[in-house]
Structures are given as C-alpha cells and as structure tokens.
Image (cartoon, rainbow, N blue to C red):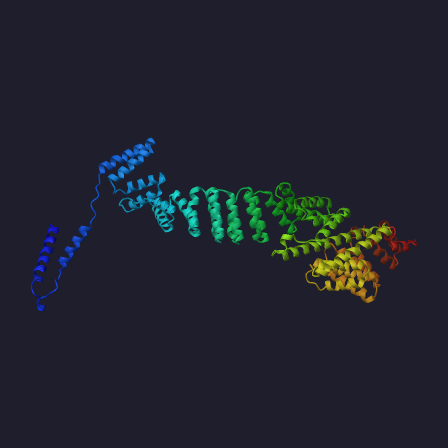
Length: 637
C-alpha cells in the first residue's frame, strides 16, 4: 500500500509539472516545491525498501537431516560423504554460523585453504555463538596468507574467549609470535603455556633464552622457581638460588636454603653456595644447623665446618671434621681439595710431616698441579729437599718463561693473566729461597758437618739471596720477604746490609705483636752476638727487652730471656745475666747448644767453675767440636 501511494504521489507531481510547463511563466507565480518532513521520511523508507536483500531461504528440516547424516558418515569413517552432507546442511541453512565454520574446517582438512578462508570470513558475519575454535580457525588461515594484523587479532580474540586455557591455540600463537619476532608478547605466552606442558625442556629453554636476551634477570629467577614448584626438580631450585646469589639477593637465597632437609647433591651445593655471603660466625652456625639439625648431612658441608674451625684456631675439632669428610669426598675434587689443604696446614703445624706430605700429595693429584708449590713447601719443611728442589726447578722454569697462548695475546684479559703469572713467579722465588735457607740451617746446625757441607750451606744462602733480591726488585712491599733478606744477609755476614733492612722492618705497622717481637729479638741478638761496639750491644739489649715486653708468656719467652742474659753478659753484668738464665725452663733447652754455650760462659765469668764444667760437657755432647767448650777444657779444635 505504501509503494502504491508513493507512486501515485510522484505521478501527480509529474503531471502537475508537465501542465505548468506549457503555460507562460510569471515570475511572481513561480515557487520551488517544498518537501515536508513526512515526505522525506516516506522517501527514505522507499529507498531502504528497494535496497533490502532478498530473503534467504532456510530449510531447517533439511539442514538438520543433512547434519545428522554428516555426523553419521563421520562416525563410520566416510569422510568424503560426511563433507558432502556438511555442505548440503549449510546450503539448507546458510544463516548458521556453526555450519559455516564446520564447512570451513573441512575445507582446511582437505587442503583447500583459500576456499576455507572465504567460507570462514562469510561465517564470521553470521549470527550465532562465537567460540575460541572459530577465532582460532580464522587466525590459522590468516597465518597462511601472511596477514599478520588479522592473525594477531583473531589469536587474541580466541585466547580471550577461551580464557587462555586452550593449549593448542596458545602454542599456535607462540609460533606466530616467533615468526613476527614479538619477544615481549612471546614471553607472556610462554609463561602461560609452560605450566600446561609441565615445563617441558625445549619450551623451558626457549623461554630462558628469551629472558636472558631481554636482560630480565628477576624473571629468570622466578622461572626456575615456578619450574621447581611444578616439577619438584631440585636442579631448578639450585638454578634459582644461583640466580639470587648472582643478583646479590642473599637473604632470599638463604631463606630457600634454610628450608632444605635432605642430603641430595643439590642441597649440599646450595648450602655451600650461600655460606660465603654470611659473616664468619653466622656462616658457621648456619652450616652446623644444616648438618646437625636439618639433615643436610653431607661431606662438603662438614668440610666447611672443619675449615672454619681451623681458621679460628679450633684445631682439634677441625681435624676431626676434616678427617671425617675427606674420605667421603671422592668425586668432588673441589671440596676434597679444601679438606686436603686444611689437613696439610694442621699436620704441618703439629710437625707431623708424614701426614702433611700425604695430604699435600693428594691435593696435588686432584688440583692439576695448582698446589704443587704447596707440596714443594711441605717437602722442604720435612727436610725432603731431594723431592722439593726438582719440583721447584720445574716450577721456576715454567713461570720464568711463561707466555700467554697465541689466542690470548689480544685479549682484554692479557694484563690480568700477566699479573697472575708474575704472582706465581714471585711465589716460586719465595718458596725456593726458604727451602734453600732451610737446608742451609740444617747444615749449619749439624755439629758433624764437614767443610763440603759448610760450603754448601753458604752456597744455598747465596742462591737464596739472589732469589730474594729478584723478588724484592719486583715487589718490595712484602715485609716477610724483607725479613728473610735481613736474616739471610746476617748469616752471610753482610751485617750492615742486614741491619738496614731490620731498621725498616721496625717501622712497618703490618706485623702482628708476635712477629714484631720475633723481629726485635733477632735483630737485638744479632747486635749483641756481633759485639762490635758497646753502643750496638746496648741497643741490641734494649730491642730484646722490647721483645720480652711484647711476649711475656709466649712460646718464645725462654729464647728471649736467653738473648737478654747474653746481652747482660756482653755488658759485664754477670749476676743479672745468671738470674735471667735461671728464669728459663731448662728442660725445654736441653737440646739447645746455644743455651748451654751461654750458660757455661756466664757461669765461668762468675767463677762457678764446677757448674760451668757441667754446662760445657752438655754442650760438647750436643756439639763435639764447639770452640767455646773445647777452649774451656783446653782442647784443640
């Protein structure tokens, strides 16, 4: 009725226009036609009506029948017939979004991606339930056509629709992100995907690599933590603790380690790892708690406990714990070597050189030669110079001629490598010179040493002095090396050179009280013994008194009292000298020929001939060729 009315109105209008056009126009009578609002609305409706698409014919009954036939064919495995019925069902109801996407899926399965995309696009415009699978299909089809923006749009829509629970869609989206190199978004998707695949190794490593490349250290640490929570893999927890330690998040690392209660290798490594971040006492208490209370009862933790006890001079306890750990550290050379070194120091301090050598040799066997200088030192301490010197010769030759490998010449580490080589060379000079001096001392103390051996002692000291001079030329800051030089020069009778070094040593602040007392006594006694002038003797005497004041009750007290008595003797104060000698524990000096030489001389000076005779007899037993004793008894040398 609306259309007929509109046509009739137009006809009337046209007729009127035609009629008016044949009459002469008058300017005053001509007016433009005016459309009312009602006319405009009517015209609009007419245009919209003409633009309407023809109604789509829908046969729901046929669509249902074809759909059920399609499902039946699929159940029977007749995919070709099933695809045909899917298409027929969609033809019967082309308004069905579900059927449209169903047809598109089957076109994809048949390899007809282009047609599938056309059908999926058409279906996406239809009404109906929107599903993650539909968005996923569109996303995957756009991947194949290379339309990145559309891919991303439908992947995101699909994942939002599935609340990011569709694992296959997450994985496909991750592949797309890999292709477009969107690393930040890829990290986010992997973070969602990894828990669903139980942190599978390949995906885990890819996420780890991404985070490292992006410099997201905290995220790396959290990744290992999440992986451990999901899988229970202690290696993941170990990596987390390593990361925390590298980032100096020590308290967090220690808090994790504090929860460990087993003796697995990872528990051991984590416990040892956090200990250096604590203060000494705290680390010791923590290690004891982990070992004795929390069940991290492993040899490496026990070794750490023993090491700490050695450092704080709990020698007996340290020895027990290091010995208990050392035999169980097979296969753990790093920790085993720590135990070996601790035991070397303990047994060497006890002068149990057989055991010290045993563990020094074990250390050398597991350290690839890194502790060979220590082994040479222990051989020298044990007077096994025939073993010490060949080792030191080879070490000297190696470090004297050391050069960096050709590939390292232009490296940024070249300076560091040269410095390390220099330090090694100086260490060899130090140890070798001390070994030579040690052998010289043994020869000098030997009362039965012939001229050949005496000459060898002098030769050793001369060689040692050359090595010490090389050391000193390269680094004169080591007070202990200067002390070795001063003492060795004194034995070589190069007194003035020796005393100049001693004067410098007395002004060095880095000596401990014990070391300073020993230096004062050595210098003082040398001045007294040399007896060149009364002023030097008096100076030496005062230095000895300073040494005694610094170490009144130490192990060296008796030696310092002997030096004091000898100073008094040189100054002619014999009574005081004898009183000082009486303060010495004679039982400790029974094997000391210098003590009996001094005692005999003081007694003789006091006119105590009988007592002097006894003292000189004891001296002769120790040293049958001692000139002072031979002179007392009127014998020739």
